[in-house]
Length: 60
Image (cartoon, rainbow, N blue to C red):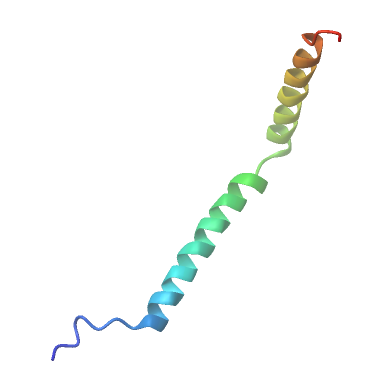
């Protein structure tokens, strides 16, 4: 019998865990790895959008 098609579950499990951790790390880099200017820009855009929504609300 050939050893070419033997799956070692320990190695496969570790490889899946590495891929999952790398995906999480990439998401964290995108979420937290931003400059102060980028954060301030996002904050100003959000506050402007919220203010615009509040301005267009009808009084009950």
